[in-house]
Picture: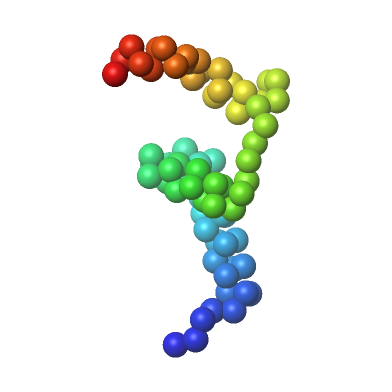
Length: 75
């Protein structure tokens, strides 16, 4: 069996991306779907900047800031 050509990979990339977006926007995304979407973004070198007022900024604001000492105290 021969390897798929670039057009086939491009189609799969588009289909997977569209499916993940559809699930997230519809509110039906599972935890696994969200993990897959995060992995998909990472593997495709997609990063975000937490600009003021952006959803990423809001998410970052929910994560507590930890110091090295905080981590050591919990070990």
